[in-house]
Length: 369
Image 1 (tube, rainbow, N blue to C red):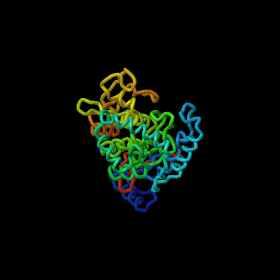
Image 2: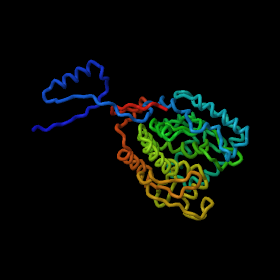
Image 3: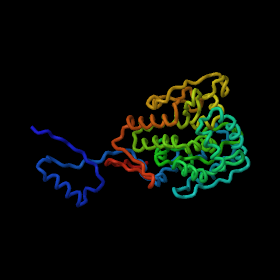
Image 4: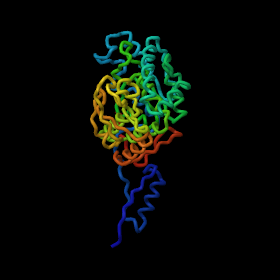
C-alpha cells in the first residue's frame, strides 16, 4: 500500500473567492489527492489586532479611579475625590492618536511628588539596577522629571517612543490582567495620572503617578526591559484564562518586583520596588534592619515556569523574589517560557510599522466583552 499523508495549509483569503474555488477544484481533480476540505476556524478569546483596538477596552476598568475604598487615605476628602474625578475624565476621553491630556498639578500635589522623589533618589544609587540609574538622568533632561515638577505623560511617551518604540496611554483605573497585558503587545503601557493623598505621601494602596513614573516608566527606555515586557504582551494575545493568570504572575515577579544580579549585589528593576523606599531597601540591602524589619526575603533564581505558579501577597512586603542574572537573561528565559509553555493554536508577529499583529492561523475571536 502507498503511504498516505495529510497536509494542513493556512492561507489568507475567502472561501467564496473565485481564485480559491478554482484552486480547490484543481486539487480535487488530481489522482493523487483523495480529499480536500476546509476546516472551521478555532475559537479563541478576543484580542486586539491593531493598536487602535485598545480604544475598545481602555475605559473598562475594574474600578473607576475616582472610586476609593473606605481605608484609602483620601476617602473622606471631598476635594481630593473631586480632583481625581476630573483627572479621570480626561483619561476617559482619550483615543489613540490624540495628545495625552496634560494635568495642571497643584502645589499640594507637587509637594507630595517632591517628598517621594527626594526619598527614592537617595536610595536609587544603592539599590536600583544600573539601567535605571543610567536612564533617570535622561528622563530629567528630556521629560521634565525633577523634584519640583511632575512630568507629563505626553512628553514622556514621545521620549520613550524614540528610545524603544514604547508609548504611554492614560487610564482611568485598574484594567483586567488580560487587557493590561494585551496592550503591552503593542508596546503600550497604561498609566494613571492622579496622585496619592497628601496626608500619606510615602504610602499608596493603588498605582498612582508616583508609582507609574518613578517605578515603571524609566525602565521602558531600556531595550532589554522593553523587549521583556513586549514578550509578555504578545504571549497574552488570545491566551486562555489560565495562561493569562500565569503570565500576570510572571509579570508580578518581574516587571513589578523583579531583581537582577550586578556582580554579587542584588539590584531592583521592578516598579513595585523602585517606587517603594521601604521594600526597595528590604529586598536589596544586606544589612538588617532594612525597610523597618529584621526579616529577610527568599531570593530565588528567575525561572518563569516556577514564578508562574507562586502565590504572592498584595498588601505586605513580598516574602519571595526572583532574581535574574541580567535583564537580557530575564528576557530570553521569558521568551522561551512564552514559546514553549503558553499554548495557543496560532502565533502572532508584531508589525512595528503599522502597530498591528499578524496572525498565522485561521482563528475566530470570541465576542469582545
